[in-house]
Image (tube, helix red, strand yellow):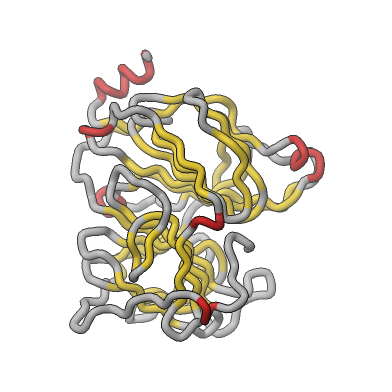
Length: 304
């Protein structure tokens, strides 16, 4: 799992410790993502399936794409399709994806890169594997997150951010046993390059086997941990969690993640996405590629 790696974690800034008297967030639920197919047929895990939308707000949907090892000729993408009313965040961990949109945005993303597309009032885009990857085959693994926009910003102009792997904020845990990659937001004394309409934080955390991480987390954000690979526990009561599972946390100032001492050979570390945002608390009307506030707005989006 390349993304961004660091040879010497001790050379990085350290995460801030939870403040004295900080309240640890309890784990409300752990769910397992069902498998499905997206676009032209690439495999995904539906990370938020079965979770109350109110606990996810401001997030709407998230797919873990792969991990899959394609044979030559097998890589697949999506055809041209529209979006309105939210943002798509595509984080590529392994492999390469090519993006193009009707607003002139686009490019290649590979190991650790992120494409942040604000659909706003409306945009068309396409996501495909480059021709050389189709010819050769190879590993494909990433995440696409949908971030809702408040009603006041749903009609904003489309925007595209190309975030290179080398731009993400990097932190190490106080004992140097965990690497925190901050893609967006302010986390434990570090910050990420992603510019967000909705206040939020997005991180990719790698925890070494047997290590434990206490991560300060903004009290006005919700908190979600999705396991990309490996096995570990979440919360101070050490609830077991593994690849393809999502933990939803309750209110508090910090959250706890720990890696099992023994991992399997394919996933030597415990890799998780830690997400959170300030809830928008507005009505959500969502169907297919549109996330609006009312059914009339959905009908208008389809007509447009």
